[in-house]
Length: 97
Ligand SMILES: [Zn+2]
Ligand SMILES: [Zn+2]
Image (cartoon, rainbow, N blue to C red; front, top):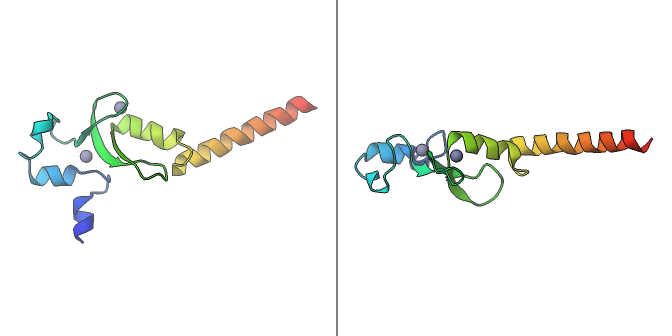
């Protein structure tokens, strides 16, 4: 499928740039990266936001992971926030007694 060829398993545009190595050097990006992290400016990958929002940006692997864990709409983030909320309710319940 043509759509799958353009988006590799990472969900970024590296496949595209690897096929045309000369095409993307204008941005000053290191080989093997397709974007600069929006948070720290390090080379990273352009891919959809891990949350359920219509937003595509560039993040390094570290900040993409952080985003996936901290964003309430991300699959992992939802679980983390539920755990945090449950802990807060549990703690509040203990304090009420
Ligand atoms: Zn970063
Ligand atoms: Zn990439």
